[in-house]
Image (cartoon, rainbow, N blue to C red):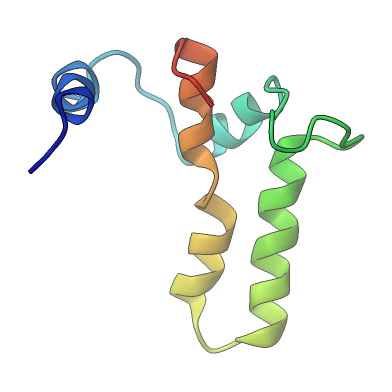
Length: 86
């Protein structure tokens, strides 16, 4: 059973009508975020996505879908820039 918070977020974000952006725009937007889970990092947050994707590509060169997942895995964090808690 979904929680009330889940239903509220679905109502707020489910239509995807608040803002439209490409995956690359979202990656760039991540660079404006200070990640509470790793606030001392000296490189942009997008770099972590690129590092992850490259590491997966080296380990699993035949799984291009997995490379993409590595690149995109933190995109949801951009919601913190719109008032959602980290």
